[in-house]
Image (cartoon, rainbow, N blue to C red; front, top):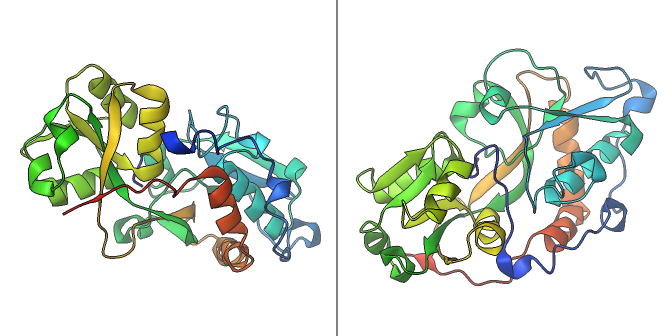
Length: 282
């Protein structure tokens, strides 16, 4: 996952676009698959779908840290998946989990988990993934008065002090692209943001929507200055399920149906913005 379990954010340029629009305005295009009403799905609680996410959660992924309101990109996607599986909103039970605990081996007390989990081969050893519901890239947030603000290449960025959260896709990309010499590694993305605000680091790396949220709502004197190219099209976010879950196939089918119906694209346009042209670091 590009973002650690706490900070999921949107573009400053997209703040005005991220209005509170209900799921019903966007997610009705796909035809629901067989769901809980015929008893065909094995869930933690019969007749209910237990969905886990992190705490706290931020825009644009969730709004007001309230998953049940169906607002925010992942809140809307979760509700759309549940509806596709045949569950009404009243049949969804929301719970909170840590990011690392969610992708650790072992039994779970939830059916699905959604909190910007990127798909990796290592994680697949411990949990199942649905097909991807969103693809993003990793971006750089730099203080306006720092050396990183003028960086247009990866070599330029290597001259700055860059913060990143441990155990995240952002860390993996930063380590691969920049090496470790100028990296400052923190426990969480919240810690990275605090370090940026305090001037302890020149820049930070996180997913692109999160980068815009950082500059739009958290750090005044910073800007999104670039993003990393990705040969596979970017970081793929998917729904996490317990390893060997009987629901994996059905959830994957639900995500695929939402993609084919154009619902995922509609939700991305509603809650995320691709309007800002962020240069790719060479």
